[in-house]
Picture 1 (cartoon, rainbow, N blue to C red):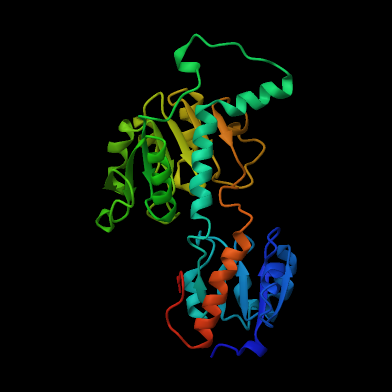
Picture 2 (cartoon, rainbow, N blue to C red):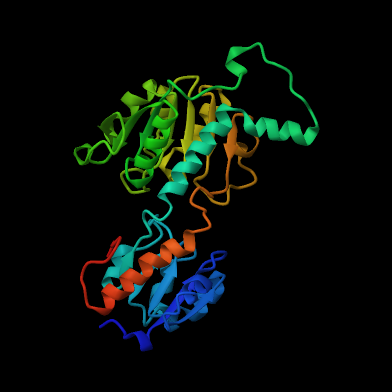
Length: 322
């Protein structure tokens, strides 16, 4: 039985997001508190009927979460949750899929434009007060997107929005998804995940937008990187482990592709020892593709809807995982 509103306690757990403040602005009257670090979450998780969390979650918390009935993830990624352990305790679980689809797609386009227009180099030159001269070597000049082919790996909410943006820039969009029968979602053609290595030679830009699952882990393999055009760009706004990072690094070091723009890496934060930091053909942002000023409110919209469904005893929840 899900607790009544006056008996419910929500724990918001995030190191930066203002979840409690934004929730309180809705004046729901539901008791809640926020923790900003894992140690405090570990101490107080037993007080909560509902936990709203993402990267701070660890499955070792489950035994101490004696009252826990529902987890509303703050992120769309769900690989940090043990569905088996939560299911065994009867804990419901929902994702925040879709809340940042537009932001991630826009970030992917920003990364592509930044690399194509050599903006990181321009910013570095600005700091040096250096006015770069004109370039004779065609391969080293700024580039334009019109007429290029973009391969989007993952044609869900993010991928479909990215396809629309890509076509607005005059690009041909080739899509890959788990089930091509679900439609093109705005791509010019749609293909199965198993066709990746066959398709990458066509692409000027390869963008990962898919979820991290057992099937997609390492999907962008050494073979896939080897099949890319030497002039191609690789972009990852999905999860770091969707790509074989060692193969990516070796490919970039050897100059077998032109560039990479990464919002995600296999280990986060990216270790200071990683050569990716210093490779001249790599542009890195710190997993900020989904960041937006509306993020908290977008997640709370899902939370409030799911709390209402749970209070009514409904079986189906929005973005339900368990």
